[in-house]
Amino acid sequence: MARAASTLELRQAAKREAILRAALELFAERSFDGTPMPLVAERARVGTGTLYRYFASKEALGNAVYREAKAAMRRALVESLPPGLAPREHFGRLWRGLARFTVGEPATVRFLEMQHHEDYLDAESRAAGGELMESVADFLRGAQAAGAVRPGPPEELIALALGAFVGLVKEAANGRFALDEAAVARAEEAVWALLARPPEDRP
View 1 (cartoon, rainbow, N blue to C red):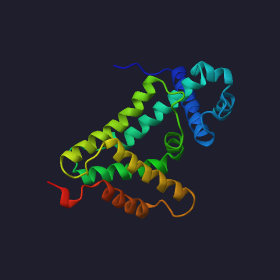
View 2 (cartoon, helix red, strand yellow):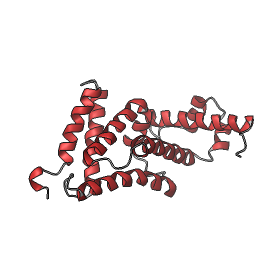
View 3 (cartoon, rainbow, N blue to C red):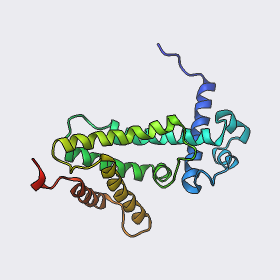
View 4 (cartoon, rainbow, N blue to C red):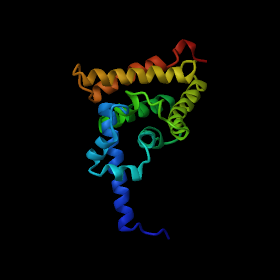
C-alpha cells in the first residue's frame, strides 16, 4: 500500500507547481531569454531563494517547463486516442485535440510553438520533444502504408500541417476570424486534403 503524502510534501508539490505555472506564463509572454528569475518568483509568490531551492538555474527551470508542456500536449493529442482508428478519423482526432488544447492551454501552445528552445534544452528535454513528433510520424507512416496519405517524409508532412495550424491560430488571435468549431472543421478538411493521397494515385 502506497504511503500517503505528508502535509509538507503536499505543500512542496503545490509550490513547485506554482513556480512551473508562473514560469510557463512568463516565458509565453516575454520569452525565456526575456524573463528574469526574480520575476518568476514574484509571479509564483515565493522568494527568489526559494525558487532556487526548487530549480538550481534558469536553464533547469526552462527544461522542467518544457518537459511538462510536452507531456501535457502528448496526453491531450496521443494518449487519449483509442487503438484501431482509420487514418482519416485518426487525423481528425489529432487535429481537433490540438484545437481543444490550444483553446484550453494557450500559454502552453505559445511557449512550445512560438519560441525557439534549442539554446537551453538538455538531452532529456530533446528526447521528450521527439516522442510526440515520433508518435505522429508513426501514424503517418501507417497511413501511407494503407494508401491514405501521400508519400513523402513524415517530418515534412507534419511541418505542413503544423504550419497551417499555427497560421490559423495567429490569424484568429489577430481578430481576422473566430477560432470556433466551424473554423476548426473547415481547416481540418483543408489540411486533410493536403495530406491525403489523391484517389488516382492510390493502389
